[in-house]
Image (cartoon, rainbow, N blue to C red; front, top):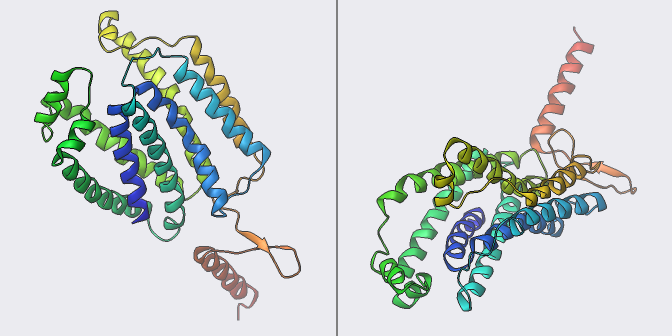
Length: 300
């Protein structure tokens, strides 16, 4: 249920935030996820703070923010209360993703990653349906969500609350299948083998991949097409990738990261020394090795 709430809040608050606030602000919020994840991981006892880990995350996040904020001019989006609410929604969006990573960290040790992802989506979809129904059937909420400086656009949004434009079917299908379902399954699967903060830190690569895809699309089309979709070649702001690389390098060389794909589960023993606590799979593996050793040493 908690994983479903995290997934639901991520999707809902991002969509509403994009509608009410500036897309540049939405992009700038995304690299905050590793910071939230590390904070939550430390609070629940999954990870320990180290100077190298904190520095790596902050440097990578700074590089990503630099690429986004200084690479895009202000789009002159919503202002006033709508923009304020939009920033709050982006905060909840990023925090929800971090919470999902933390919650599923324990679940993937007991259940397959695909099962965890599937149940989270099932519960999240049910919650989304309830909230969308409430918003669309409440005039005040619908008017606020559809707020726009162009009154005609706002009225079109209100009148077609339950309609999906035909031109949006393929983009929406791509977002659901790849940007959402596939991405979350991959993240949940990786959560079995890496620390929570390490899983989240890859969100800082989003500006890099966006710039690369934009360059490929512009190269394969013409400048007029690129201008129509507000695409441009990488610029000086893309030097922020150096910060991303430096931050990831610090994280990769952090000696406190778990080796062999498991978390560091050592705790102080009665005599003060570190004692390693194994999960069921590890115990079974050790038992199997011991039995095999016994057979070999006592062949008769």
